[in-house]
Length: 60
Image (cartoon, rainbow, N blue to C red; front, side, top):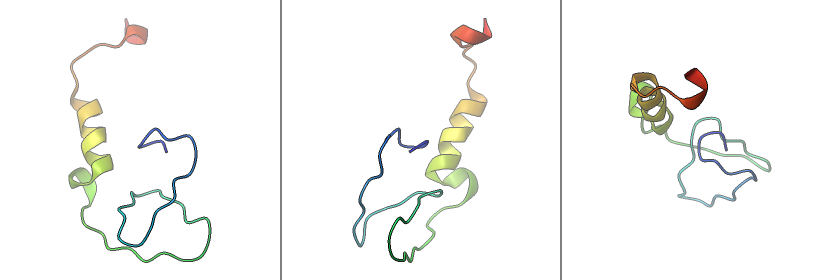
């Protein structure tokens, strides 16, 4: 939810995409890693934040 902004858990089904840090609340999960580091969804978001030149309101 820190990544997607959801405040409550979301149900995923077989074949659905999950992100690093996802929690399996019931049963087991098997996943295939399709990207790591800066190539992952989380890595791309972190890179955008890290490379921004804009000064935020609280930084002024």
